[in-house]
Length: 377
Image (cartoon, rainbow, N blue to C red; front, side):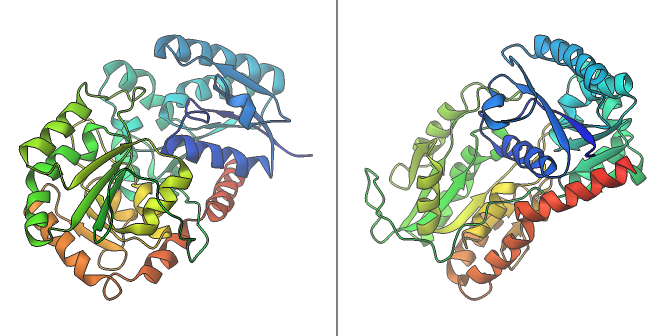
């Protein structure tokens, strides 16, 4: 008879983003080995068919947490799961309550920000629930250190890097439907939510002009939009980005594409020379891992990144890209110029692909199953 797992998360499709994808793949991997029940955001039932699902509205954070704690306890008493898995620190408190209701063990996935989120209420109510988990799965060595500093016993911490979907190689060349000319351009690409931590306005102001001076044919494409659901969303990030473009005189060298389909993103990767990841190391905010750098590597594209947060776990320096001292924009510009001239030599597309294969979702799922089995034992 299969053991039972109650999976609790606020981050799950139909939302989009790295944490949503990770939670979806974690749930999917565990579904292969256990009887599963999902407590997630409203609408998640469409992605977890043929199993019991309870959806909760995420319109209000306070109402969500209150309802989630109530439902977690109710479901644990009725269904009697053997293990409770929390998809993030936000789900750790309801998971702890559910564990008490069922006499079950707990596993919590943490991603960096959900440990250090700068709220007294959060630090008082949620972080202790993380610390009391039987296992805490950190997405990078940096996140593991944050968990240790928060009070999680070292023998309860496991490091498990997020996975990545590996495209078929060679990538099929398809014509791009864009309203600007790409002929003769060297494409630099940034992908992700437009939030303060990503550091794009600063990169455009302090590094891109130097790059363009040396390589006039450079075109910087930015994929993503401001995140309405991010707890650290700063009003005006898109306006700041537009101001940076004008102030630096980069109107002919930067194109903001907004959100794009997965198919278009794959096409963009196929024409990209370098992926850029100029993340900032901000108080109360952190880049937990840097999954997009591994996604770029899976598409044979090297990454130039600031060595901040957990990014060093996602980029193999001088192999799948270059790691640069945080906020050293002169060095970052130089690394981009060096990268443009190192393709096929120090930065090998095949090295990128080989590195990304270590992060397949299949391998992630196998390791996650093993950790849960150890916890149950």
